[in-house]
Image (cartoon, rainbow, N blue to C red):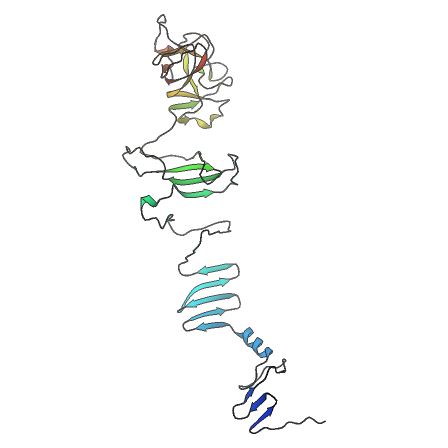
Length: 337
């Protein structure tokens, strides 16, 4: 059979399929097989898959009114009303306008965070002091285990700190504080802060003596009474009612001078002045003057038979001791020079 073309002037009906010549419409068609290797070249021609694919591949932008998304060779740009609000290139995303992120957590997986702003605001939605959280600030993640050297570190405004209300400046109902914690500050401990020079109106400390490190000729325990001498700078005083007493070993000084000289075994702190425990033998009454005893490195209370001068006195007891053994007694001390 020889294949030939035929023309339909008015229309053609075959079963449920109708071809209307005046409108070029085909109705009743469930499927049509076309040449998928060539794109149609004019209107009123059925579009095959290849034609649709070619058109989508060649499309460089999507436009809606004055907004459009443009795909270039190395970038994608979102234009809103004539302004490029978002530009994406290889390894880089730039947002031209403000960015609002709603949610409970924002995670940034970068090595360095660089911020151009000079102020970083926390608690943006707090409208009054009553809404302040207990802690506001920064957290350094160190693993969050129970080990003190791996607990997370915090630099925070502590709203729970009880300001005494008597300071000339400040009195803000809290204090900047450095903590370590393994459970998001539910349990916490204070940590050290280092600086070159601290400028302040006043300072405050939980402990009560000013101390300095001195080289010791042997390890010394808290409250030991020392004199200058021995094989190093200080040694435990040896002799009753010695006028060579110099000071008392302090393990928790409020202010530490010469702190880099060594450690507390080789260079213990000697309380220069203030309140610190003193190792004492025998009974003591509150207010008694303390002098060296016959026990090495140990003080005792003066008796009525003692003839003393200022060089004998280590300090004065702030509490009583009722037993005859050796123990620690809080006292106000000073160094003898």
